[in-house]
Length: 371
Ligand SMILES: CNc1nc2cc3nc[nH]c(=O)c3cc2[nH]1
Ligand SMILES: [Zn+2]
Image: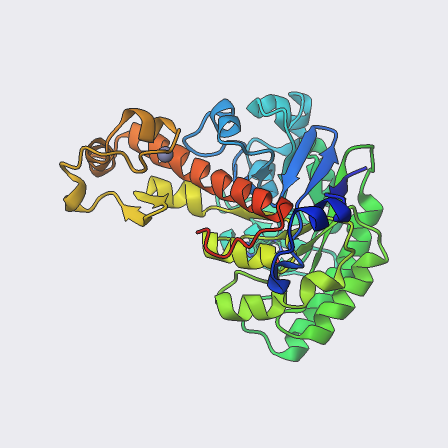
């Protein structure tokens, strides 16, 4: 059973009362077969069964309770059956804590050149060797089972932005039909869960209908899809002002693909519990470090003789043992250690942000100014 246990309300009442705008924020624990997830939680992205430039034990030291794997990449290489034969993704990648795998639909649409959406599913040619594949609610759910993921995502269609009301309506209805088939194909086991993904773009009546359709299927958790697809923060928050409230209050709510620290803070304030985003890892490899002073573009020449750490009080190896000058140099000459240290720092920064958010919620304190 994947369940979320919240801090007892009376405990929070005793500590302090935060402003109304924080009343939707909640901190809790999701109990799974592979351990607990402290929420609000940030999931580092481990696309091809590895968080790029990080050892799994290093990811663990940053405080991450759960990482995300991409079904689309793993089904193409090394193949779900092979991972299953080798003992599952946890063993294969030496990560024993919770794993969430996405359902592959989003990646197919963004990565494979030729694809065709039918009622049955999505037929596509691999972006690697052009060979033909089909992803459907059934095959996606089976692939995620073979990978051994702790949290399986329903197979959905991410409605593009912008979409007309009609386009969003038919896309949401397809997602509802696919959710039903995904739920039927799910092999439920204690401590494992499957999350439905609601769509409906920016139209509140479609979001409501999507939520009602999926609540009927009694998923262990719910994701809000169709956001962070170019609509911008203002419009995303406008949807998040009401969408999380359409979902069961006692189940995890996961906002897919989000985001920058300010996006995460705003979404937590609106009732979101889980996040995944490539920003800390991808931007780290590109020389961007998140710090309390703002984002540092380490390639900037002003750092070439800067003998100070990214953050003097950060406990990550980059900050403890190296200077901005060294990181500047490593990134400039494209040394692998540069990608490693920048990634490690950013993952540490994002997990510290989540830890502080959890603490502030537990103490009923406002957490607007954290960034
Ligand atoms: C980076 N932004 C972003 N990553 C996403 C992944 C998704 N997967 C399934 N379904 C979605 O709607 C969806 C939306 C997303 N937005
Ligand atoms: Zn650091």
